[in-house]
Image 1 (tube, rainbow, N blue to C red):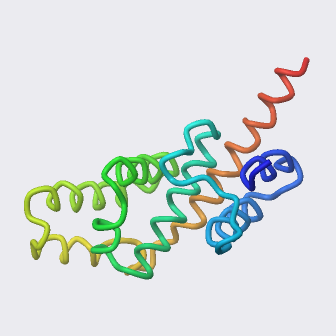
Image 2: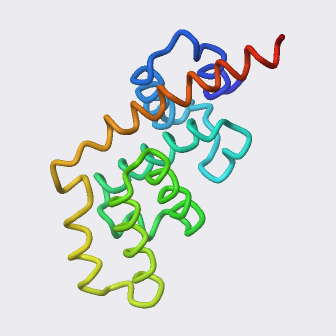
Image 3: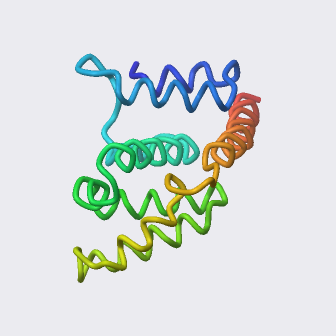
Length: 152
């Protein structure tokens, strides 16, 4: 059983904050981590995938800036991050990242990327984590209800 499966097994007993914190800790545990790669999350619930994508994006952005995000995260992952922001209701963040991604396709060293970067949540007072926590809590409850329905 990998780390994600353990989280899902215990999900009724975890708060949204616990889930987010545990995902982050497990993702960056080190050499002994037992965590799927970002491009291998398809079998897990969408809200878990979304949280993972946002945590990975946040870490990459904080450590390596937007250049690191664009250089180190393949296009399919960036598109999933954009979708994750839309899912949690952070549409402005999704729009900015989407614009940056499009510009990067043709002009990776554009000054416009730098201008847009300054509007990303990490560089403003926008609290992405409260949106993620609300979303995870709502989706966790739906997930648990669905499990109970399937066992009836």
